[in-house]
Length: 260
Image (cartoon, rainbow, N blue to C red; front, side, top):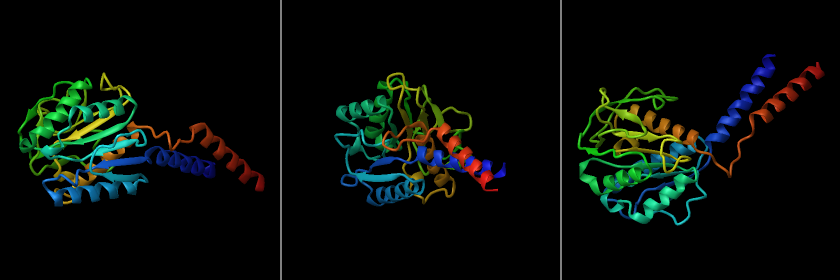
């Protein structure tokens, strides 16, 4: 019986690993960034964390014409030159409608062209009129499920922007009273015009650099990766059906008993 439990457990871990792994596109705008060291640090860190959970990573400067090959897109551009134009917003809308997972980086009040384009996209997707608050926070509470699997309860942003409300999404991080927050997640089913897709966004770039407020910021980044991975499917990396894993486990257990 102990052997059977061990095999089933191993099979479950195999399923979990296969479900998480996938092709990831990181768009960092390295050819346009106003802060080269910041862009380089956050790109290197994000790539390493994705690869640590088995994801394959492609890094590009700008949005590609065809996004269908990627289960997740992490657009970590934060500067005003990377404000999403109408064609980019349409491309991301189509991607989310088809079940993709998207992370969008924003920043504080010095980067309002970028921020406003993110707000515009969310509103067009049915996520609500979130509004912007130049909070420049500070410590914020981390909300479940982003408190795990890597333990974190709060994060101290270097100088973030804030959303006035969470719309149809859920807070990733917010002030303790929930009045404003710097991170919002729209799980699959939360965006009325893109029900199959999942979108996450945080208005601070520094937390992803593996440099500020360690280990909390790093734990939060890992949990974001886990959340987006769980929300999306990867057609090019099919997940074994649980029944198939159970059949395999039962067969191995029977073989072991027969040998006895």
